[in-house]
Each structure stands twice: as C-alpha cells, then as structure tokens.
Amino acid sequence: MLFSCKITNSAIQLLSTSGVDLEPLYRGVEIPEEFLRDPSYWLESEKMEQFLEKAEQLSHSVDIPGIESESFASYLGHNCYHLRSWGVLDSVLRMMQKSQDIFAQPDRFISYFVSPAPPIGDIEKSAKSISFDIPISAEEFPFTTSYLKSAFEAVPSFIGEGFAGVDWRANRMNISWAEDDQQQMFSGDNDPGRVLKPELAESIVNSLESSQKELEQKNQELLLKNQELEEAKVSLEKQIEAQNEAASSTGHSVATVVNLAQLADTVAQEIHGPVQYLQEQVMRLSDYMGRSQQLVTLLVGQGRKDKQIQEAMRRMDWNQITENYPVLIKNTTDSIIRLKTMLMDLSLLVEPSQVNEGELETVDVNDILQKTLSLVNLPSLVSCSTQLLLDRKLKLHPVRFEQAMLNLVTYSLQSIGTEGELRLRTLRMDSAAIIEIFNSSKSRTEEELVNDFSPFRGGEFMPKSGLSLPIAKSIVERHGGELTVLTTNEGTKFVVQLPC
Image 1: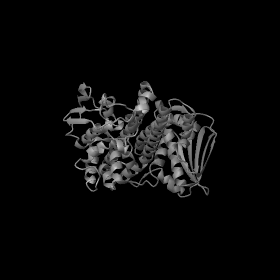
Image 2: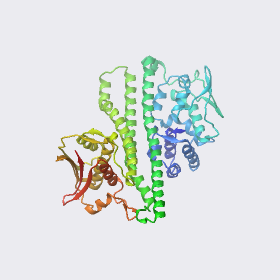
Image 3: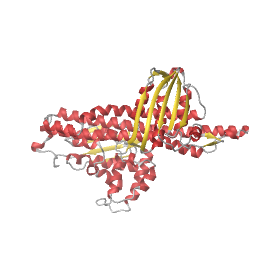
Image 4: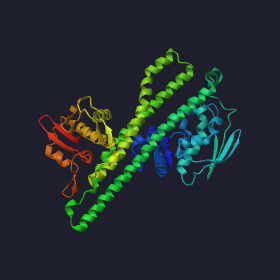
C-alpha cells in the first residue's frame, strides 16, 4: 500500500517554516527531497510511518504556535487549508459548495491519499453524517491514520465552514458535520451557483481530478520503475557473485569480478540520469496543470472567453501548453521504456548475445539520431551540427539502438562540458552504414577509451567512464556491427559501422 506525498509535502512545509533542520527527516526514508515535496508522488506505507514518526520527534524541538496538546500529525491535518500543500486537490475542494458534496463520496477523497484506493463498505448515510468500513487499521498505521482523520475533520474549512467530527475506531469511520449555522465562503452576488451552472462546475472539478489522477499515475509508474531498478541491481550483483564462485572453484581467477561494490555504485550513478529526466518531466506536468487551473479559475469568474481571457491565455502560453502536454506524456513513457531496456542491456556486459530476428524493425537511423538530440540538454555554448546522408533504412531494434546512440551522445556532451562542438554524421560506404559522433573533447586518450569499452579487466571492474560506452558497444555488436573510437588534435570520434 502507498500513501500520497501530499502528506510529506505538508510536513516539510510546516517544519521548514518553523526553523527545523530537515536533514534527519530525509535520512529516515532515503527518498530525494524533491520527491517528498511533490504532492503527486507516492511513498510506501512503512516509509510514510517512519517519516511521520521522525517528524513528530523533530516537532518537539521547536515551538509551533497553536499545536498545544495535539500530536504533530493531527495538527498537520487540521492545517491543510492554510498550508496549500495538496496541489490540484486544493483547487478541487475550493470548487465545492457544501460539506455534503465532499463527504457524499468519501472513497474519492481517500483515493487521493491511499493507493490502490481501498474499498469501503457497509455505508450508512444521513443528512449530516456518513459512516463506513475501511480496510485500514488505525492501530497498524497510527501516524498516517491520525493525519487522515484530522484532514477529514478539516476539509469543510475549504468552503468556509467549521471542522467536521470524525471518529475512527479499528476499521470503522464515522463523519458528521453541521453547516447551517456556519459562515459561507460564497454569499449574495458572489455565490458561484449564480455565476456558473452546476453542470459546468461539476465538469471543471472532474477535469481537475482527471488531470491530477493522470499525473499521480505517472508518478506511481516512476515509483514502480525505481523498485525494478533496485531489484535489477540486486539480481546483477547475485549473477556476478555466482560467476565469481564458479570461477574460484575452477581456478580461473582472471575472469573473476572482485569489485562488486564499485559495480553497484556505478549502476546507481548510471540510472540517476534517466530517473532525473523522468522527475523533471513530471514536475513540468505539475506546473502545466497548475497554470491550467489558474486559467479555469479566470474563465469561471468571467463566464465567457472575452478579450481579457484571451490575453490571460496568451500570457500563460496556453496554446504551447496544450501542444506540449501530450508530448511530455509520451516522452515520459519513452524514458521509462529506455530505462528498463538499459537494465536489460546491463546483462550484456557479462554475457553478450545477438538480437532476436523477431525484435528487429526497419527504421531510419537519421530519425533516431534526430530524436536522440531532442532528448539531451545541449549547453548554450556547445554548437551542434548534423550531416545525415544515409540513404537507406536498416533492420534494428529501435529502442535498444536508440539507447546506444543516446549513450554515445550523452557521453560526448559530458566530455565537452559547457563549451565545445558536437557533430553527427551518417553515410553509406559500399555495403556498410556509417555513423560518426564527434566531440571536441581531448581529455581521454584513444587507448583509455578503448579500454572503457571493456570494463572487466584483470579480474576487476574498472569503470573509468561508467557503463554508457560498454553498453553502447554491446548493443552495436548485437546488431552485427562494430564500434570504434578515434582521437585527433581536434577531438574524439566514435564510429559505428553496421551492415546495410
């Protein structure tokens, strides 16, 4: 079971404004800070409990105004309206008009904080209360359930009403509210019911919820892929360890890989880039959704698309957002696929094999190189030129070959640094297709780069340049090709030769 990082984001905001040193909090869960601050990210239930327990301890080190006898988790849930830490959900709740609208479907609210959404049963409703069974034990997750209980109590504050009453015992939750005597956020001419039709308000809420759910689903996929990375790393270590034992028993010590710790560290560094790219794309999606919500708010206030609304759309680059949103979704999905493929290719460093005929597709290498360039961040002082003259398509595994090209281009950019030159060239020479990737770096000799193609040397794992070059070489060779490197006074050139 997973809990939403809306909770961790709330805690971080509250503790940081209170002057608490957050480093012990991050060490407790071993999750990057940017993930914990992302309200659309998810955290394993055990880690969430650890996080809130540590936050409870840290809260005792400072004087938090108003907390009095409350636990930190309860105080945190009660202040959800003021913290504005729930992302799109904050906007959804502010669109509601009555407590009954919020509590009528408690499973929807719970699904924002628990994944997979737990089923609720034995529902009993009245005009101002609802009770139901929920398969989450308050005793099993005391800190998280304390937060959720308080958040339920505080939800009416989003529409200007007083706290609800929530009783959560074992697996039974009872919620009661009173709104007749409460001050309404909307009254008179400002009543949103008079400004927009209920159908439109419902449509806006559904659109916001759909966007948030899509974003959270992508982040959940990212979390699962991170778990796959850890499992793959462990599997690779076990595989090499088994080969170690086999080599030792037969006396072939030269083939033994003795530096497993360094291998594991290198794997962790190599996967950081793709994971960071995924996170950046998700954060951009979150930004786009935030600006979309602002636009929706303006449209609701005006009720029609007049000149002011058109100007607001222009200032927020609405046309660009609508064009880029599906592209970002696709790029995120592609990155996950590349990440998974890269892990599969790690095994090639130990036991290379040929690509299965059924995996090959007829593809345009020029298109692959153009796409590769679109996936990397080109420094402003690095000039890039292409001369793509290859006049026929090749039978390749498109995803894996793209990974090989991305590895070579990324390595070249890392070698160049902030200023230099990158050149890509393709051509056909007799019955061979040639791909040249040139960079202006002169930091490595040709002999050093050739050695980097084979990281296992002298029975040890010696990754001078990481895993990108060995994996690229393995992928090229799996396609029946050859990868070589040349160094000149101008820089370094990687040459890929493939049969046409």
